[in-house]
Image (cartoon, rainbow, N blue to C red; front, top):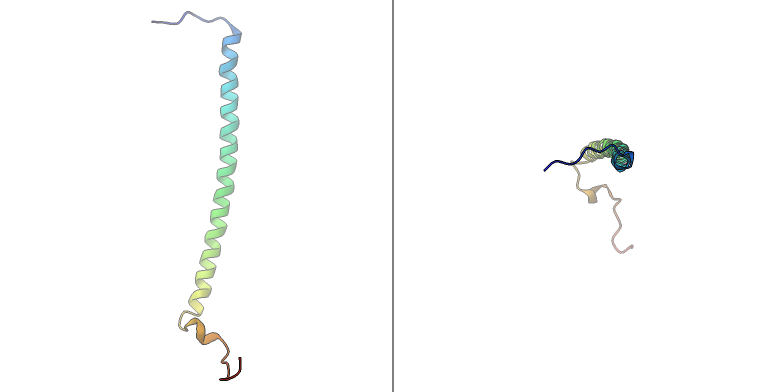
Length: 74
């Protein structure tokens, strides 16, 4: 079953409106994607730095870096 030919501008308008909405949505998603990638890159750099710092102290247990308390005080 074929559709009759359409010469009406009114029938084409909803399609072009839908295309425009999809293009706007794609642009929004591309912007969000770029922002998320930048956030991930910054977080990965922070993780690398924290792991590096952790590696500097990895030979000592955490309690060994605390000052000693005298018995009976505190």
